[in-house]
Length: 68
Image 1 (cartoon, rainbow, N blue to C red):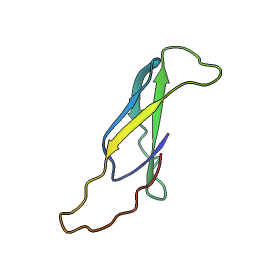
Image 2: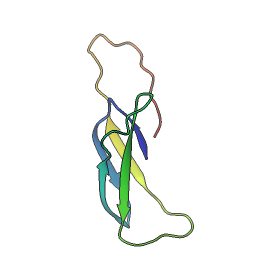
Image 3: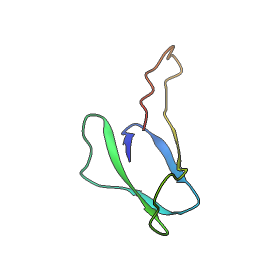
Image 4: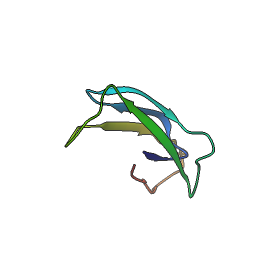
């Protein structure tokens, strides 16, 4: 998964999610690669939820939200 580099408190959830960690040295164009490990191999559709926080300054009136 690729998550913006300014994201904080990154978390992945799903029935089969075993662990997740960001990979050092994979930062390009403002995104960081994360590895999501599953308990077992999954074929077909599977729900995976990603959450994060993006810090803003108090004076911010608008922002660009980049997707995962």
